[in-house]
Every structure is written in structure tokens, then in C-alpha cells.
Image (cartoon, rainbow, N blue to C red):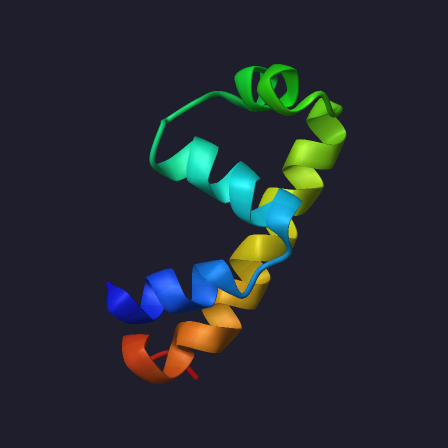
Amino acid sequence: MEKFREALWQLPEQMRRCVQLRIINELSYQEIASEMGISINKVKAHLHHAHKILREKLKAYTGEE
């Protein structure tokens, strides 16, 4: 979990905020968009890119290749 937190804090601020609102606060895409003042498509893009970045950074700890 510590490695996840470290990787999360390396994300760009807006991307990190989207991930936090989605995972920790369990908000919907619409709720995140409203909270942050961005489009739903931007929320989806941030979450998609964050997932790719986090998977790459954490693959050594998850056993993925």
C-alpha cells in the first residue's frame, strides 16, 4: 500500500485528484467532473492514464510483466 501511495503522489495533481475522488471517495465520473469543474471525458482520460502509469510503476510489486 505504501508503494501505491508513493506512485499516486507522483501523478500530476489533477490526475491524482481524480484517482482519489474515484477510489477513496467512491464518486461517479459525473460527480468528479462537477467537483473538479472539468468534463466527464477529461475525468475518464485522467483515470485511464493514471491506471496505465500506476500499473507500470507497481508491476514489480504486483507480479505483472
